[in-house]
Image (tube, rainbow, N blue to C red; front, side):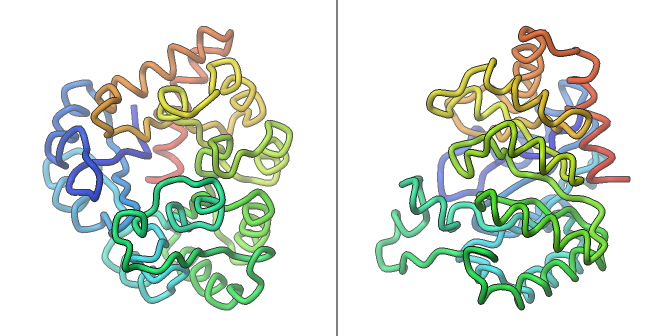
Length: 273
């Protein structure tokens, strides 16, 4: 199994354990590797230190305010240091603010409430976004759409094709943000994007059910990627969270072999091959 979305301490919110604790959990459960995500800092150095233990651990950068938003310089530095993924804005996306979901500026009131977007929501961001995409293409890294809206995901996918990006992941598109429908997700999958479903959605997303996630999985087809997005103290350990997601979706009549591939060989190929 290969979990392409997990959180660990240090972070600005409590986590179930630190980097080494999470590594030990995956090793104990026989996982092949994982991708360490942080909303507010690059995880490239942390992942590199963990991978010395023999298990592939990958990191990247999320383009929130702490990274300067859609900031090509931050992306260039992260990718040059070995980063494998660039997440578009998450906690500081305009969708996050509109939905009233947590942001760093909620904790530190002296920060402004600036939000970030790409075309067509913010046409002025195209020059910076295009350079970010060019850098991702240069390094054959993964472009993850973050919490951006459906029209922005479609724009990113179109631009990714123009820049020759081979690896695009829709970040939990059925989550509260961006809340895409199965039909919208199917259209983006048919255009070449992989589609993520997370255990976090099953465990914590208001109104989310295994049946709703199964509809998303069917829309994704063979481009489905399952991850944990775990690390919260009130979630199971990340490996167990991902395995639970597989079980719940299998209980909805989906093929278990295909689900296990979506939690192992498909994301490993997306991030490692």
